[in-house]
Length: 109
Ligand SMILES: [Zn+2]
Image (cartoon, rainbow, N blue to C red; front, side):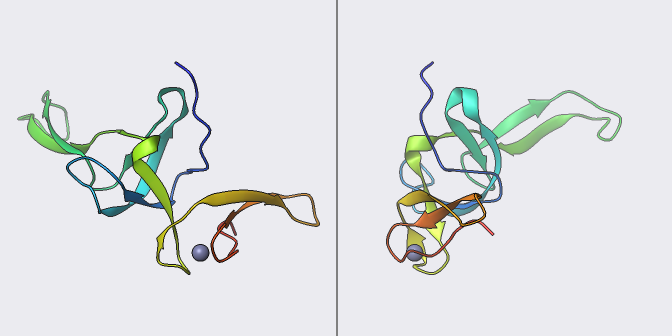
């Protein structure tokens, strides 16, 4: 699979642009680089049948967020309070950080 370049990272706040959860905002729990997908908190929830485990001896159905394609996600800018395009820039100390292309706010700490 061809890898899509993305700026999305774990703990980012993203907006869902398509699908049944369109418009929702959630936190990125996991980025699956090889699949060009990310798992977002409370988004794309599927009911998964689970086998009994020690913690849950009965097993049963659990709700689990399923990965969403990068193309359906956009990073939220905390200053613009909306999804924005993100660029990269290098700080004086050589560290590369992401920034909002709209308001120029730095996204990474
Ligand atoms: Zn912004």
